[in-house]
Image 1 (cartoon, rainbow, N blue to C red):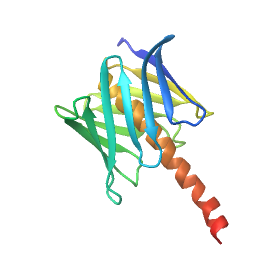
Image 2: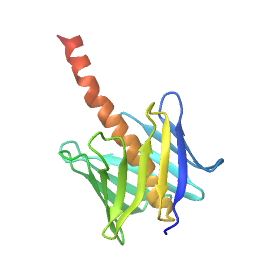
Image 3: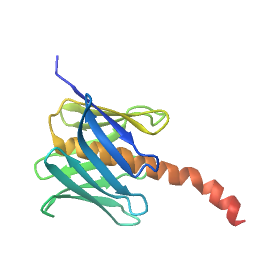
Length: 164
């Protein structure tokens, strides 16, 4: 049986900062800008910057702490999924169920990471087979981006009513 590491994240009240824990030890954080969908993620000694680009064909650049481009994420607007392209590998981000309450990252061999946000949206768990800070960072970023995007979509009817 494969060993899975379990991590928990907790969001602050505004949801723009998250802290990542393994057991009870703080190992990382995410700080995001909800308007641009950009974020900085730090896990142990690794640091990554996620920079959102494109309006009609959105993608996200992944840069390391030296500013070097190490990968990107291309989104499929119809499925809500994404393709993660790193220097040496490709992964897929997709929902695990039709309620969009659980997500996964997988490669050609199968599922590596499972992301389960809490019902209240103030945190959740990440289970990972891969001992990889970059995949953990991508998981934290994508769950945050997904939450922001679905929140924006949910608010469209409210804004429509207010404008008319």
